[in-house]
Length: 120
Picture 1 (cartoon, helix red, strand yellow):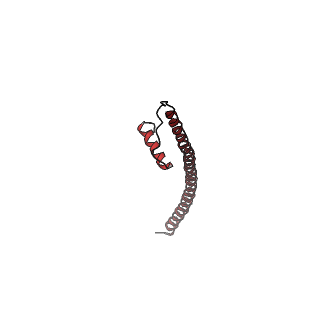
Picture 2 (cartoon, rainbow, N blue to C red; picture 1 turned 90 degrees about the horizontal axis):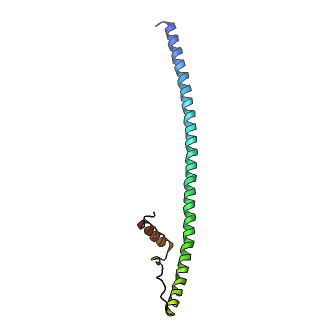
């Protein structure tokens, strides 16, 4: 090969090296941007999931209040029913009592009731 061919080949190799470096830098920048965007999306979805859990927690606390109200009102209604029976009245039947004492069992019981009624 003559000197001109070698020099032209060297120029081509140098240009290829420059192009490859530019492509590599562009790829690295794009990869970094994509990682940042995916990270932001991940954080947004993580926050949304945490908000869902907070909402569930709020509803469970609210349910706990209703459970305590139900227990208290059931006992009061049962006492009233017994007094009516003692006075000779035939009061209507009592609502279904909770088969469980603790909130966990009551929630499971109610979920099963709603499922059997096709409401959940």
